[in-house]
Image 1 (cartoon, rainbow, N blue to C red):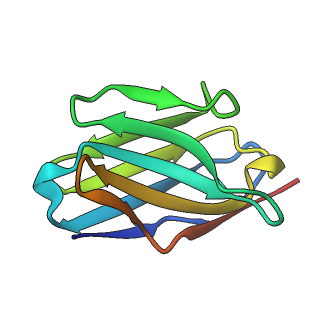
Image 2: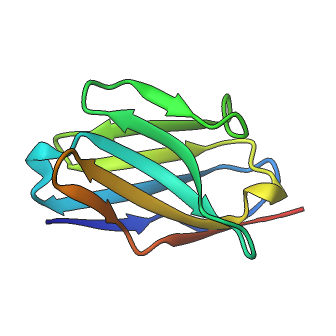
Length: 116
């Protein structure tokens, strides 16, 4: 099992920045991918970005150039640095971890609200 705890959400004005953190515990040695998803009110959950255990990063077009995903293996923590935030970035952001052949795990989510 893997436990994920997000933090760092909050209220920010458009154009501002936030950094989300996702602390992982449990069977973290076999995590293959860490990802961030988000879900806005009335919308489906959508993928935002992910990082592989080899350090490769991938981004949704809507956040490319503004968001940066990273991981600190020593701290068992993944981050999502969000710059140039827009009101349409408002959502609950979820951390996700995948262990190939074992399962997918989710955090409880953290609210990000961007005011115009």
